[in-house]
Length: 201
Image (cartoon, rainbow, N blue to C red):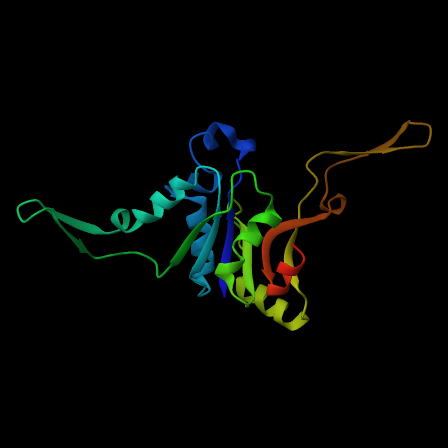
């Protein structure tokens, strides 16, 4: 099963970093967010990725083009015609396709543009800036057992502010500290989709 990573947006909410690189390429612990997400999928045996790129996509392509250089020991031998010898290559067994899905394309359009790379098979998808500890194996199993076109993960985020109970007369009746019971589930971003999804995008 292939993994689709949405990595084409402008990243306007973190513009101090994203003015120089796509948000998924912002580093955490010396490696891009995108790499951390791919490592999660790779831990469950999913190693084929299609990256929906757009904004500053050349930086994503260049990073993957040079990846093995940064993770391996290399000898540059200039005495014999500029020969390069790679030692102890430490690359993951990944197959990565970076697709230009446009600069201002919305999510549905990006998904539609990678259809030729997915073939007629189910695929996984997530956002290129969301690191999470989702159990991918359980997610896929849940999807297969329920026979739906799409499965998405949800997470309950605790309300970050105190809650006011306001009466009909606009008077504050009580104040309650922040609590998980005041939150609603939000999209955690890890999805499994059937190819039938392309008929609706």
